[in-house]
Length: 282
Image (cartoon, rainbow, N blue to C red; front, side, top):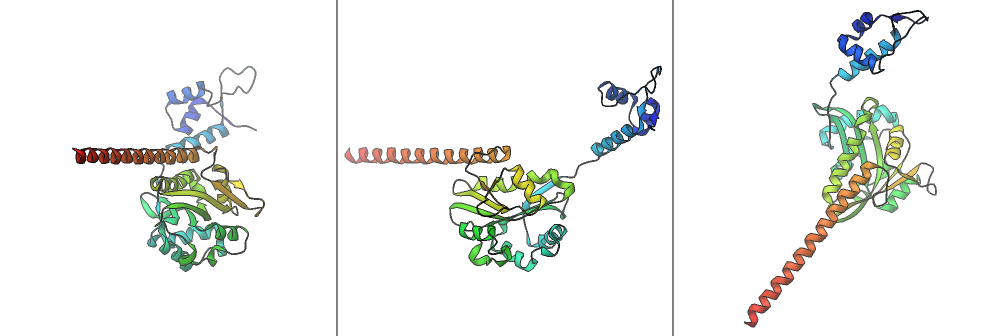
């Protein structure tokens, strides 16, 4: 049997002003019920009021602010704890993973509480590798822990286009709404590098819920000819993701700007050479 509350009782449960209560009722956000055909005064479903009260309480709770940055040596312990909650005993050996970061710290973007960096919310490990090495990983011929950091993991010292293998992506269940901020932190970095250094293709194997979320949100394409779990995101191809589109637009703008600057510099140098020649003739 459904329990009903009067308006005054519902207002007491919700702990909101009467004016707010009646406004919500008028907007249809609080349903009024008439138990019988002859009832003159409306009442309110106690369960609906309880659900609304929970929602109002959540909305009123101050939201913690997240921050993203590249991993630091002091983060490795927190990183391991976060990964262990997802991968358990299959979590990578911290001593091995630490060598990855020593080789290139800009391969792991971490997400954490802005007020307390030790409060880890998520992380994205993207290893810059040669494509032939990536394909071996996708086919299961080698594991990421088999990589030789000094030989296999690339640094970003040289200009060019870099391809990546997503070794892991993790976001705490209660912080899923911060996932795009984590990815955007990586994209912002690569936008700054353009056009000297470009983000090429991002490969990965979907073996976790967070990996599947990343593949869906960024519209990775399956690589069935390699593996049922292999996917790729080509950053130079059209993509329906707004985040990817924004990144592509920003990078293309930088490329056009660099091209225009180069043309203007060349034109100025040519004009300067002509002026020098004219001076010599005089």
